[in-house]
Length: 109
Image (tube, rainbow, N blue to C red; front, side, top):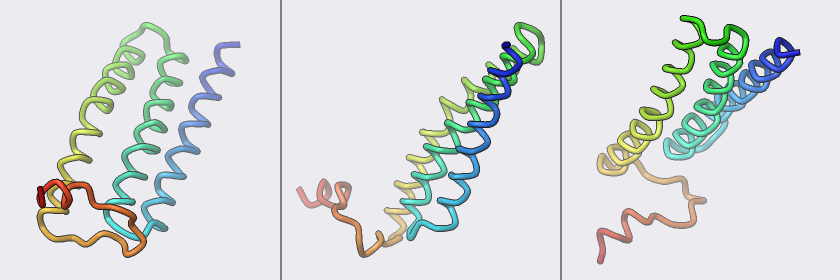
C-alpha cells in the first residue's frame, strides 16, 4: 500500500513541476515567472522527494530526501525574493496588466 502512496506523491509532484515549467514559458514577465517557478516547482520537487522518502523509509536514501526537502524549503523562497528584488532594482518593468507595485509605493513614502 505504501508503494502506491509513494508513487502517488511522485506523480503529483511531477505534475506540479511540469505546470511550473509551463508557467516559466507562458507567463508575461520575470515576476510572474518567478512566482510560478518558486511556488509550483518547490511544491512539486518536495512532493517527489517525499515520495522517495516514503519508498525508501528511514534509510540513507530516505534521510537524504528529507534533508533535500528542508534545503529546498529554506533556500527557494529566499532566492526568489532576492531575484525579484534585484530585478526590480535593476529596472525590469512589470507586465502592463499588473495591478500594483508595492515596492515602488513604499519607496514613494
